[in-house]
Image (cartoon, rainbow, N blue to C red; front, side, top):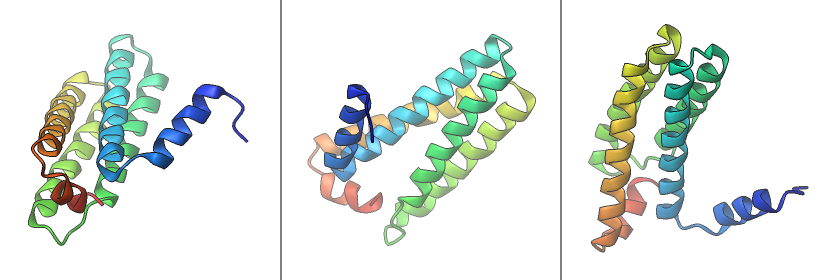
Length: 131
């Protein structure tokens, strides 16, 4: 049972979100974890860097798992996501922030693309690709 009101709110948000909103939540989480991983690398906090970069990897794995391969773009997206995973692993093992910064730019760009697509009334096809 969840006692914290904020945790209850988060759980309810996830349970009532549309597929498009869930996708944006995943991107937001990945972006947050990558930023925290970069900050930890900058502060030479190896343990926190490892924790946050692994969390970011887990979110990217969720993005891959949510792809619908009936759409050709899914094949391209999985390649991008796999490259992001490679870069996150590189950043984590070498404790270098540059690969993580590269991933961060891709995540922000992809999130913005999904947001724009949903605003231009293409939400049904967007939800079908990840969904």
